[in-house]
Image 1: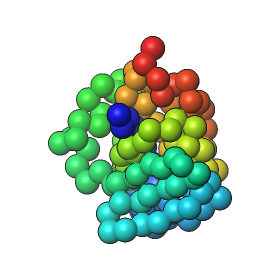
Image 2: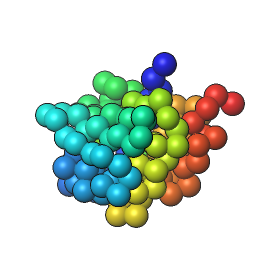
Image 3: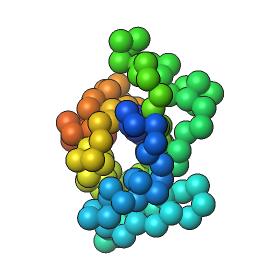
Length: 121
């Protein structure tokens, strides 16, 4: 089963190409059209840009004070391996500020994400 989380990057100029640059050290990365694929060993995850956060309901469960006021780049990540996603997020966090919605009730700064946050509580 695939899990999904949301990445909200504080810099609107960040796109899949920049994300690919940020995560090169994590594993084999490729961008094919609108999908970034990251592979490491037998693990992989997929990143797509979210074009309309309202339609996708990205901020519907967020406290109002946490919803970004300035334009942000928003991505959805599909994964099966929490450790790979944490490595991806931590790598991006070295380059820019981002917030992660784990879809398990936690909204955290990218640098604070841990594998146990990506499991049901």
